[in-house]
Length: 471
Ligand code: AMP
Ligand code: ZN
Image (cartoon, rainbow, N blue to C red; front, side, top):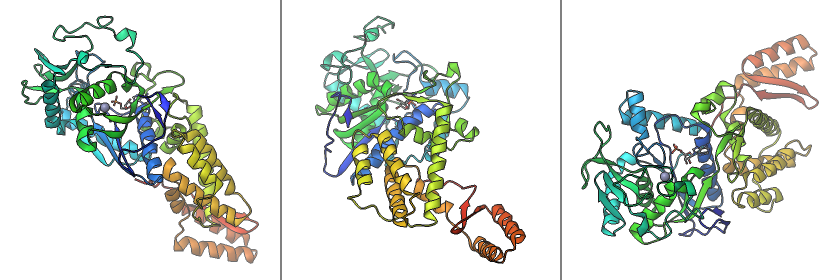
């Protein structure tokens, strides 16, 4: 896998044999998560599924940021939760709960598995305070009039672990007004003294206040995964400052390596441009559904991009992926009615090609091309090929996460009443009573079964099909 710290593709070696410990930077629950945010979690989901497929036990932790995320990179901005709570006239905790619920509903629509642990920042204030105390003891932090700051000059190489050099525009005083309480322009807030009217504030050794965003992720990841763990993910915007700050905090406090592999998802763009509220091109999952798309077509689009280049979302592209999904489903349902999935043998070359693709830095575009080879098997005249194709697809889909096996099960289920109608129709056709046969076909259609007459006799399909998901 590619590691942002080494800037190279390196072999994955877990800290503990057979286990993967992974932290995903989670959502700030002050608003809907848009399709760009959700795409970042599709990628994290593929990482988890890949390791589980390979036989690892994965402990996946994701935080929910319900305090501390400031507008802009500088500490002077207002907390996003505060602004939203005032805008929507809601208590910040109620607002956070509402948007977190919506986020999980959308994740489920995209068949993203629930993390092993979901940790809310506001439930971990004592852990953050303890970590800040350690940083003060070790001389990495100082108390100022308006909070506690990290002194970046005490951590050699601050800001350069994931970035070759600090971007020019972030140099001291270049664009930001440096807070006079800070010793250095880069110093960042660990704890911010409460301002009058702050809706979220807690007691601390430094008076009432609220935690910084970066300290949340250091405290919660180490609380659930240990001082050193395997994988940490986030979007490319987290390279700086968020993850550089996490490294400075965690390694400053423990003196041990923090994360073994850093993974950053390149941003989703819309029609080649960044998504911005001001340009009105910020979409959420329900916008896709309103246009008649299955959210899983969007998941497929994400898989087809590859996480190390920007994903260009277009409606045309989404139509293509929806067509692909429909084509796959129909091929699967068709084959399943005439063949039973057989477990793919380890030696199967399609399966091996899939494993080679997905273990090459989670190369999902290549994995999809391999899946197309399995789809091709479904239209083989040879029943054994069709069985093998089904087995391969259901196996591969444990990583792709398109819910194909569950979909197939519901698409090929038939109840007794429909079975009786099909039998009656077969009888009518044998007797040459086509008027009755047509009438029975209409009846079946009403019950959700489409019947076609083929050389091998009647074939039926379920429509419309209700989706079932893995999680
Ligand atoms: P936030 O709620 O702003 O903290 O973002 C949640 C996650 O979505 C973070 O990992 C971000 O890096 C990621 N993210 C934000 N915008 C995009 C985007 N356009 N494409 C991909 N990931 C994004
Ligand atoms: Zn984070």
